[in-house]
Length: 172
Image 1 (cartoon, one colour):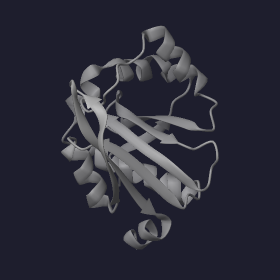
Image 2 (cartoon, helix red, strand yellow):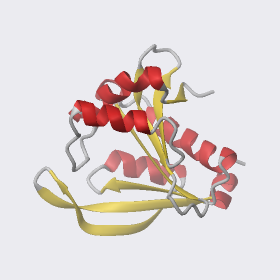
Image 3 (cartoon, rainbow, N blue to C red):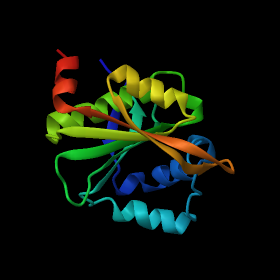
Image 4 (tube, rainbow, N blue to C red):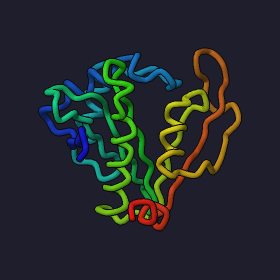
């Protein structure tokens, strides 16, 4: 049984979602600055009915507050491939929530959405994410050299992927 669940962001969740997006400590490996609050609020609100960006709060079953955010990006030209990602708030890290959230995103993507392929990208310095993805069964497919400007320096970005047959084989 999972200690977390994913809750699709709804109107009443916009404030909490914006709080997490704007928490710089929640995004230690991201290269870009968050937009101002009003711009961000507009984006989050605009995504509520989106078919291409699905935002989720990661919620611990024993905690009334969300512990992070998760995402599914569906390309405009959907060919049964999606991209996933998540972040866990610093005060909730090292509890396995990132691992569990990633597994839930895979389950939803493959079992409910019928995806054939799921990808995830991360900063090469983010060893926790790379370890989670590789442990779950993602394959390292590409390394983009010096793609991200992070902390004033160029760093690599790693692309991971897993196919539906690999996922279903792993859960047997």
